[in-house]
Length: 478
Image (cartoon, rainbow, N blue to C red; front, side, top):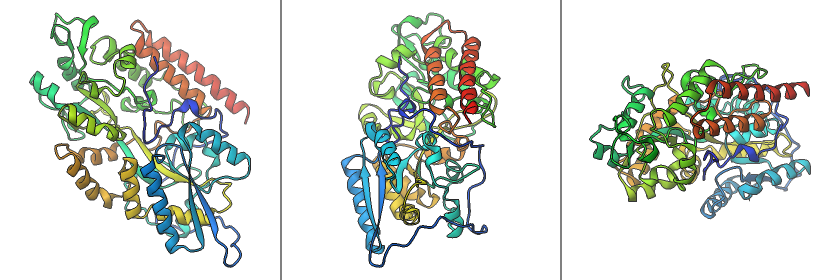
């Protein structure tokens, strides 16, 4: 069974497609984001072009969303708007199909023809090529760039101890989507919409989900006559499509699976084991979540659209299917529950821009990037990408637009979720041997949801040993 992790029209960043061992630098967790008023440091400089000549800034699009015809049209429109007020800079968006972006990007780097900007790009795309990006902190400090309008957690997504690689365009927070019709049919109250509600925990969710899980005879999973071999409706699809690394933070663990110095694997720490056991129990003990075989075959589009799943915790990039859901059933969104140990973490994806450090025109690229971050431009880009704008001042506009399209949904829940996002470290964040460790974790998740008799302690010990081998290999070559 292949775990359905990144069916992202927005971030479509499958780790196995990235180059292994991308030469990422040794990156400790994070430092506070740059804000206006700090002492300026020297920003990179490039030679001014001869009088009368334009500098061409190439913007690489292909690491995720942005490749649809209407998005290409928007990019070209924005380029024209920028050039109308910056006659010395020419902007060209280079759109590459997602399946070809790795090959194209690495070829450009190897050939000394690096693009000047890459956008939109998510945390995983940044991590896969971490060592290729320019530190924009000197630009932020030089220009006194004001970040106070950005949601604080969003700034941490791309701010590391050694550099800041970009500012957020928008975010895709997680919420609990739910099928109101199935709740109504069961006579149950809807899940809470307020984050931090003392009555909304994962234990409570399992209890609720058991009443929504039905066998072919209509017995729920909490009843004595329930037949787990003939389930026709599930109360919760768990964290299907969410990577394994996105779960342990809810139990107090690090989502990276490695120690703070990036030298020791911690996949068999108590928090990771508890998270793995919780997932296993939700499939094979409480039976509220479909097993891997069912999830991999029955839900060809997404779990909710099947009409067989009552709740699902997933990112807001599911926006591409909101219309389909609305035609099929009544739905709404609730808060993400609090974890068993009191940890409230709502996983998040985010889109940003990056400037390759081998760009021949970083100064001009920075000017284009600033234009893309302007409120009006950000608003249009975020709407096109299906994300929530990273500027707080755009929240009301975003809410009004979503309410106009879907008036019965509590859109404020998405905004509230941002404050609880796994900003740094993010579950997609960089580690040594990035792709190898990511794939090892996903392979372990596959075994958890497909094998009923899986020994979780043994599984996590094996995962940890495998990850430690990759870490040791990485550091031995440094």
